[in-house]
Length: 155
Image (tube, rainbow, N blue to C red; front, side, top):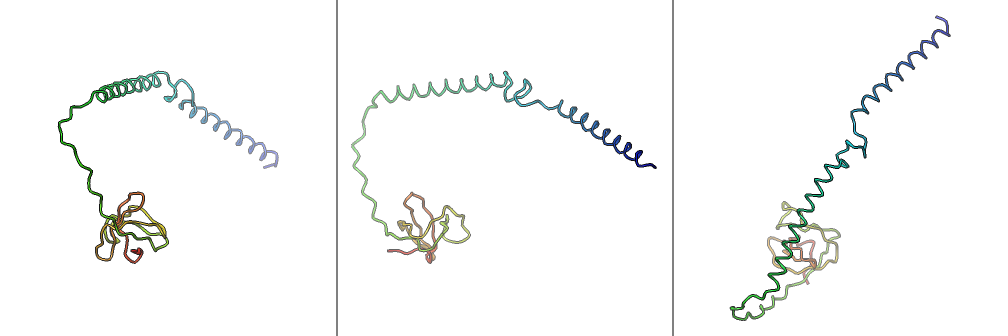
């Protein structure tokens, strides 16, 4: 076959493939709602109206609840109970600090318990108790957990 026939045949195949691609692309695009179009459920008027109505209903319910709480708060409750004395102060906890570089604080004394949080070297904590070489501690942020004794120094 002459070279010119090969070139024409190749050009015809390319045109056919491009034409089929354009046709398929248009058909696929026709089934999809363009973002922001009337068919897009995120902006369709009825969808938005339903969501706004639900939010306004919830807002009205919350406003009613706040009003009744304020009304109940403004009315003093009759006091018939005897005065209560202040609770005794809690005994001071032994203090300690984390001696490991990056330590797991666990939900129980042992490596098989889940990790509650982590602590870094030098972080202080109060000692609540101990068991099997582990300390039950309370960190300064209020988190309670267990730390291995070899990673904690009691002062």
